[in-house]
Length: 156
Image (cartoon, rainbow, N blue to C red):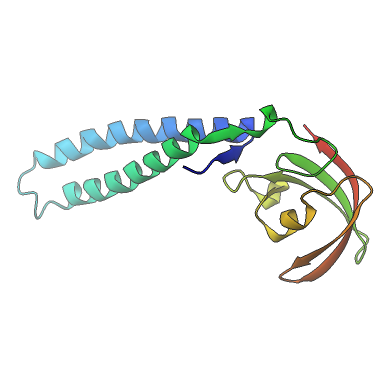
């Protein structure tokens, strides 16, 4: 079983999703039972749709339970707070454009670029891992090379 690294917020988000899916599963069971009582199951669209939806729901529940069982919460791990790793918020300056960028490195489950959270497995994050404040890094992205100066690394 591979370990899943999550922040505390990410872990709680997955737990909340799991609880909601289990509630939906219970509601769906009632719908399926109601559809079953309507007669012939081979031609009962409500029953067939309900069973298909239940299958998708059960797969997601199993996936979440597995991730949560194997989760390691990054906030509790002893990491070198001077270096960039999962959970770090990094402020950097793009030498090419002069723009200042700030991103938090998160797990794929927590990534949301519009909120400044990028997956630790993204090309940008991979190029930043292990660097520290004051370092200059060259990151190869699909759009080309970026030259970045690391201004600040913090863990919140």
